[in-house]
Image (cartoon, rainbow, N blue to C red; front, side, top):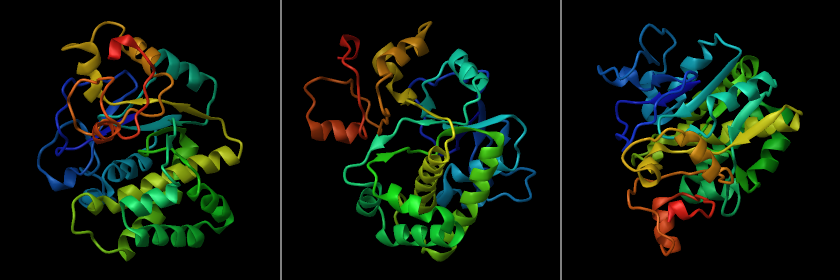
Length: 288
């Protein structure tokens, strides 16, 4: 399982140690001489799209991973968004032969389509749907249906059997590359990541297609390390992952937006939204 990071990432308050299954990979390595880990998406790779990282974000690393498949299962996480899975739990799931492990879905305010149009560019959504109809007409009705759904597997964070990950990449990247070729560059840095935002939706559509085809898809929560200090103090205690899992088992997603203030019960909804993007907590006195 690859953990994607870049030289532009903000440092974490408390870094999470990699498990024996996790391999750091640097995305956007073509844009800098700095190397932050042994594996990157550019050096020695003739097909590299690393130079397009500002639009693709983690997508440039996913592309590299899709061209270097050498294990039965392949996964992608972000440096600050990790599956709530211990090594023992992950091994058990893989031994059971699951097809896909993905994030617990995040609820949309209106629908996946409407939320995207509200937060980004409506023309980009239309371009993506047009390309889906062109590249995958057999499943287009499913994608249209899911676009109006209210549950979204976000982040392009997945673990899949090798053959499914290959299918995923072979399906997604022709759409993503054509999308980036026909849509204009955005002037603001946030929406400049347009291809990455589209790929998140494509990743969700692929997962839902796998479900529709009867694949064994397992959902797990996501924790970002930025919340570690709030829960665990200045160090990671023994058994922290087990404790965290027990606390967040019912969480759809814990998505920290950059704030560092401790969690408080009396924080207003608007303040919560500023700090957490649709985060859900179990009631636990140790968190308040």
